[in-house]
Image (cartoon, rainbow, N blue to C red; front, side, top):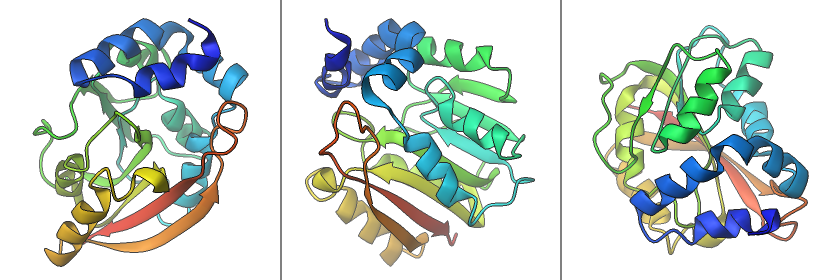
Length: 209
């Protein structure tokens, strides 16, 4: 399989078990492949926005942590109270090698997460809510584990916003008083080498309770 096809390869996963297996297989080469073949910058773009809302002494959950690219970017910007979860043990193994997270564990978006309610001041998710990946239902648990007043920053592709159920879930959580949308950064090209025509957004929510 050509490296240039790996993003489409994971997009094509038929279920979460297959997705986890593919990421386990890709984990050792993931960072190098993303940089060389795709120029992935979602973690940088999201952290740039994150810094507008979240102070460096905050407890941060890295949602769908992968190999820890977002966490490493946060560390460079002064954050140190970092935890994370991912569905792939192979990716978590790579994240552990960075030595920057207090806690890393397997967790699946769309299922209950093993964290106390309000345990974190903020959460970040980069490249997680995309084609064939985490469902919109995963937002319920993220909103639960972030304390009221905290923020959730995520990247997402506008072309899957409505068909992926994200639009409806955003409205559901807004109408229920769980969060409010505070900013949308439009027109982000986060895979400039591999998918230069695919546009992303960075969206920011404040948790209300």
